[in-house]
Length: 107
Image (cartoon, rainbow, N blue to C red; front, side, top):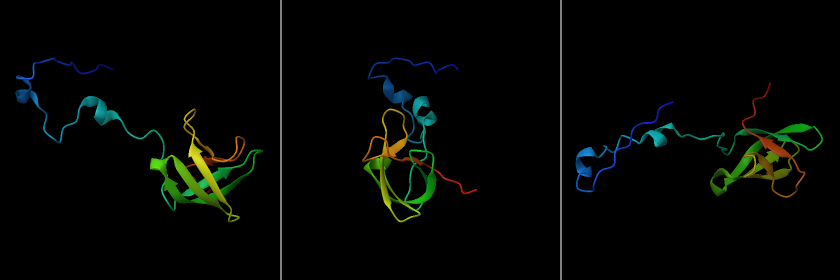
């Protein structure tokens, strides 16, 4: 893939080459979210350490989507944080706690 050519110009020359507010540089137009953004009310799947899983519902989203609270079908509230190592939601309280999957599509 070829990248657009970048021209360097002096400050006095830039006014003729300014982009309109509706245009975006190439690198900004191509970027988008790399994971589903959690939203309150969204279905989720809580995967327990040992193989079991249960459906849940997102009840709170904090820290710009990096912390999520999910209520499981048994009524228990689970807290998850986005892991910087692998970009997955892991248990906020325990190293070997449940994981969270978004979005969950019931089968």
